[in-house]
Image 1 (cartoon, rainbow, N blue to C red):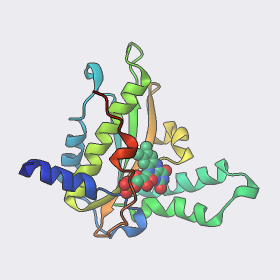
Image 2: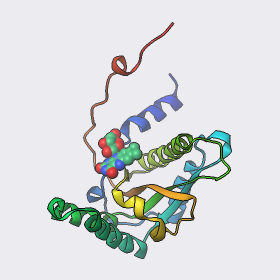
Image 3: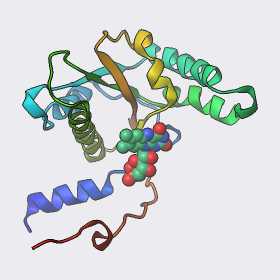
Image 4: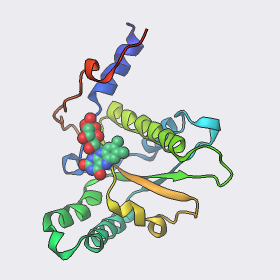
Length: 192
Ligand SMILES: Cc1cc2nc3c(=O)[nH]c(=O)nc-3n(C[C@H](O)[C@H](O)[C@H](O)COP(=O)(O)O)c2cc1C
């Protein structure tokens, strides 16, 4: 093809979900975080609504997030389903991360854009973030625990904002196993 395509293909294929237990200690410099978020806002979006909103969680706020997620796991789980390992992990993950981006969406009350289109635009922005992390050697993944539906107060979201995930990030050289992907023959039907 050409060099740009090869670089892009390599990045897309090597992007993996890397979990916090595989992060090394060490902060991510503010200018790096800004460069990553800058890439996010170049994602495609219908009618230029730019529906993405991000809350960058670092330092002391990661400890608060750890407590919040542990408490939420307890509140959301019945006594018979309570799993002490999951409880421990919920609280541990933010403490193992250098930063967490709360992935949020802002719906304009006047918008005629269907919600799925705004969500799709947000997901494109997250892919930009994820690929940027891959290029920089930052392990990351999109987490969507039930707790995200209860984060309005914690994240100080406004009425028309909601949280669709927590994006965990930390320096990592962990090589995650490559998952299977369906072959093109299974997912593409050709017409014409
Ligand atoms: C919208 C979305 C939500 C996700 N939520 C979770 C999650 O809650 N927990 C988790 O372990 N992985 C979550 N993931 C990551 C996927 O598990 C991961 O992307 C998938 O296993 C494919 O692996 P890969 O990203 O390394 O190709 C999520 C991914 C997406 C796109």
